[in-house]
Figure 1 (cartoon, rainbow, N blue to C red):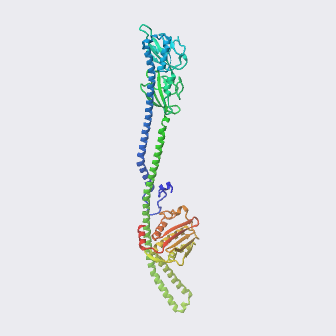
Figure 2 (figure 1 turned 30 degrees about the horizontal axis):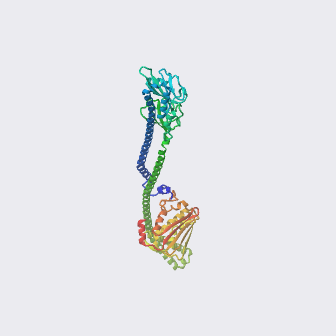
Figure 3 (figure 1 turned 45 degrees about the vertical axis):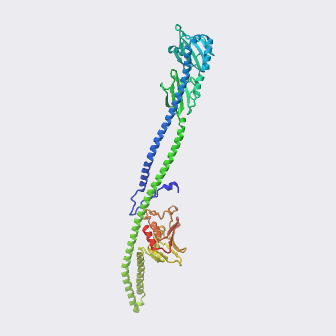
Length: 584
C-alpha cells in the first residue's frame, strides 16, 4: 500500500445514503479537517516559532561574530601601522635633538645617519635638510635633489606650521610614490629653523598589509581622506587611484559597517583613522563568502526542519485518519445495525402478516374445497350430471384452484415459520425452489429462463432455513435487477469436500466493474444509486452467510454476467449461530 493509501480516509468518497431512514450525524470530512488543523497548529506553531527565533538569533550571532573579528583585525593592523610610522618619526625626533647633529650640514655625516636608519628601522629611502626658505641644503640618497625648492610644497608648509608632519603618498619631483616624514627644529637658539625630511619606501609600508590573512575574499588597504589609495588593493584599484567605496566618516575608534555595491554585492567594511596621519586603514570582506559556512549549516537545519515537519504532518494525518476512521466504522456499524433491526422487524411483520393471511384464507378455502367436493360427489350419483363434461370440468377447475391457493398459503406459512432462529435439517433444492416460487411470475413476464442443477446425492444440511431463504432471495433479486428481459439465471449446488456444500447463482446481467468488486459487500455501496438501491442488500447477505458459518465470493465480467458462490457447512451448531447473531 502506498503512503497516500495509508493516510487516505475511508470516508473520503463516502456519501450519506440518500433514501435511508438512518443517516450519519457526523460530517466526517469536516471532523478530519478540524482534527488535522488543530493538531498541526498546536504542534507545528510552537516548533516553527522556536525555529524562526533560533534561526534569527543564530544568524545575528554569526553576523556579530563577523563584525567583531573584522573590528579586531582592523584594530590590530591599525596599531601596527601607527607603530610603524611613530617609530620612524621618533627616530627623526631623536636625531634633531641629538647634540651631535650640529654636524648635519656635512653630507657625509648625513649619509652615515641615513645608513644607520636603514639598518635599524628599514624603509628609509633618503634623508635631507631644508632651510627656512625651503631650499634643500644637505641631501643623502639616490636622487639629485640638492638645491630643490620645497617652499610651495604642502608638506613643507604643514611641517613648518605644526612642527612635524607625515604626508600621504605622492610622487613629487622624483615621480615615484613615496611618503614624507618631516620634523622642524632649530640648530641653535639664535639661528633660523630647519626641517629634517625623510622619505619612506612604500614597499615596506605595503608589506604590512600584504602579509595579512583575511577570510571572505577580503582586502586590506590604506586610503587618504580623499579616498585615494595609498597602498595597492586586490579588488579596488592601484596606488593613487580613487576607490569606488564610500569614504567612511571620521571616528576616533575602529568602526565596522555593512554596505551593498551597485551590483548588489554585500560587503563588510572595517576602518580606522590613523592618528596624526592622513591615512585611513580599511578592511573589506565579501559577506556572502563569510556567510558560506552559515549557509551550509542553515541548509542542513532547514532540511532537518523540513524532514521533521513532514514526519510530524504524516503522524498527524495518520493519527487523525485512524481516529476518524474508527468513528466512521463505528457509525457505519451503528447504521447497519439499525437497518438490520429494521429489516428483521420488517421481515417479522411480513411473516406475521403472511401467517395471518394464510390462516384467514385457509378457512374459506377449506369450506370451498369441502363444498365443491360434496357437489362433485352428488353429481356423480346421477348419470345425467356425471356425463356432463362442462359441469364436471368446472368443478375440477374449482378444486384445482383451491389446491393451488393451498400451495401458496403453505409457502406463506413456511416463510412465516422461518422468521425465528432455528436450526433444522433442510433440503437445499426445496429451499431454492420455494424461493423461486415467489419469483416465477416475474420470470415468466420478463421471459427470464431459470435452470436448476443440484446434485442428486446432495445431503440435507443443518442450518437456519429462514436466513438461508433471505440469502438466496437477496442474490436472486439482485440478479433479476441486473438482467434485461430474456435473461438466464442458473442455480447450481454440489458437495465441496466432506463437510461443505457449494451453492452458485449465476446471471447474464450487466456485470460489476473490476474496481467495484472488492466493495460490493461494503455497507451503502451500490451501483444502483438513484434507482432505489440502498447498498445494504449484499452487506446484509454477507452478514447472514457469516452467521450461517459460511463464506460468499463473487466473480463478474462487465456485460457478461455475475456469479455469487456461497460455501456452507453441512452442519452448524445452534449455539455458534446465536453467538454470531449477538455480535454481528
